[in-house]
Length: 529
Image (cartoon, rainbow, N blue to C red; front, side, top):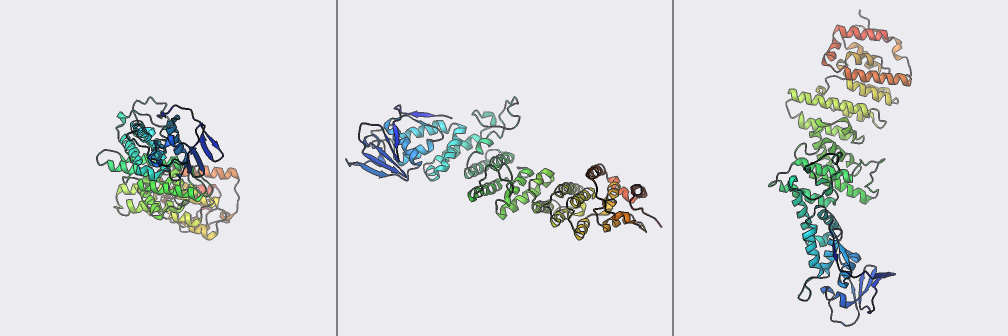
């Protein structure tokens, strides 16, 4: 950061209760009131340099300057300059000092060719605007004086300087910048990364950030600039100000519990959402879910939520289960994302296309894996579980092995589920799409309704089924048995995904294998007539 020192006299200002004055043998004849502070000063020092204070009166002058930009601090800086007392200017105070000096009309005239406004203007243009970080800091300070900064052109000058540097090719970047990506410092980096500017830019106010990003987008008509870089800047800003999802049980360290804090974060989510480039892939699916995770708790507008869901739906094929879990158990939002995906990528296209069928089956596996996780959550209701499980078309599931595991997880973690609700849950299970291994596990699963077990035994075309009373014997499994069951089912659903095994359940070999396993474990035998 660059500095400028003006004056060389020692600081003799001191405070006496609510009064500020300085050590002097000359009686004070100028009284300036600013808010709750009164300054006792001298006309001979200030009037020649402050045209606003000029008067022909020889008496003591009293004035109120409550409207001076920057308040007491900025006025005192200008007053010390008039006395020749040493002051130090930097990007942190040059804007407020400049606005205060303009307010006091401390400009050059015939008798004073080196007044404060001219000195500050020269320092601002030749030093502050030439530096990257100084320009960022100076721009951020304009949020304290928005009206004056706009009026005197400070905001526009800072933004032009910042935009000019962002659009500079990385190979020509010579100024220092902040870049803390993991592993970057350890690498022998010889070139400047394309997103070198994103971290420093994340320090500024959201309104200023929006103005700069909008200006960058407009400049792409003449200067090539990838939408992925815009997306990266949005991602860095979001991580800076919303590092964690906000819900009833969890707050982040930036958010305040007050309505003002919530309002500011709502604004961040809405502004960031509106700045996302239209190009697909400009931001990641995880980034979109991170935004959606805050929508409900911050009461973001329904229009913003709908647009985020649409964009997330267009990129669902790139999602992972961990990304969906960012929704913070908002199953309805995940379901709407799935429905948006279907509307954009499947229902409007040729359903018989091999590529589209493979895509929808990929989404089916993703959702079933997500269902397996949320099934273990006590907050998951039957209706929400079923609404998501039923949101996919039949073609999305080449087999129902993973869906069965999700159902089994749910019944295991929700023993209070009533009989009719169990039937509702198991109704979405297609017994003809279970592999022999999973089918064998299912007929021994005492959590399933008897009706489902009968269907599992009957779907193979048997004419007669005898079910012994052992199927309904209540056996409470031990913890070790529960763990062994989960390991077995995991092994089945991972190793039994081969398509030939899915189809094999209809042939005699698969049927004999299932019968043999059930007989071996003391479960109902299938008897042919």
